[in-house]
Length: 487
Image (cartoon, rainbow, N blue to C red; front, side):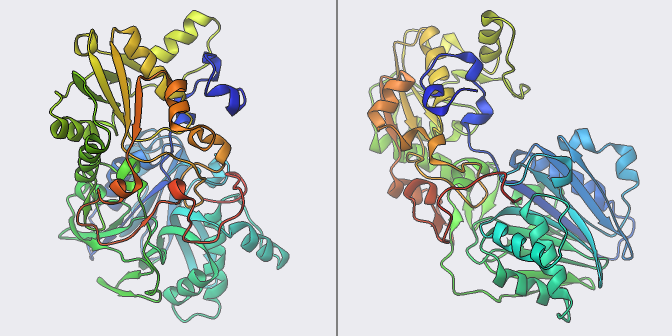
């Protein structure tokens, strides 16, 4: 792949990889505690919970189960249905389970970094699954290594579990050790921990990453998003509050709130892009938020056009909102092949062009001879956006007006999104008009920050928009390295 300065402006299809031109979902966690029902298939339910959270991570997955005496687990690289089959799941028997799907925001993409992480402490086994990113993980890791701690992985989840086992030496109960760990770390986290007979859900004091609780008639459930509760027919109880530790033990649920004085900062991109549309996060509907973003975008950046289309999948709800607000008819204009993992480098120019086209293709009947408004959730490098605009014009669009349902991305994220450097972001280098010219659009309009922050209607929290403003809720390093240490 060529340097970023060349890549987002060149036509070299060898450079094009759509995965590098979108923000990536952090990770997803799921846990289930059976209420004295030994017949409940906790591993099978965790499988379906993780399946519903697959959008949050596609690199690796794992499930750990406890039978009240021993924790056993299975994890590997790949998608949930590739890793777990009936044979594997049949060996994961217990009364509790936790699972994880991973996209490596920090820590290399290797099998040993897959989660859950299971360790043996003086108080027994502990399993941990983590969504988020610990900003001071490298410093904590160095301190522990100087004291003799040995690390088996390069991710920050192992830093967390080693801190917990360290504090367990002087703590009376696990939640006390977790509380001490929370005082040591800075960053974002939605955690699920499991011992032989206890399960904990933990959310960072700023609430940057989501975590919620649900219940079936026979179990308690903890998950990153409410869509995972729906997948196992669990009733949503509530979101775990920022800084809260939820404890499930002896068939009862309770909580402690050692951190209550922080200004909450849920990641705004949970609503823009990461979360599934059917999820409810901290009181706000993801689907409704995206629809509202499209409406506000139509008010802020009106245009004369014949049809509104969305980039599948995260641009579709905003496109419908734009259409209804503007009165311009909505149409399906782009088809996305959801079975293509990446654009492989092919041996000839013709094959390379074919590899690009099979990812997105235009529906000519919708756009031919028309002025087209196309809606996407964000522009990172701009290569994918440029390709889509070219596809539309080649298919006969008279004009292509690009509208983006979030403000320009200008700053790195250190809290679980795979944007670790400013040089990756086209909006950090170019003005809006220069981006418009680079992507070959007739016009370009971004939703304002004020407009975006009003879209999660009914939300009970504040938001982190540091990737848009550069204003971080926690002190961060000058530049991040995705593979330095982390989730």
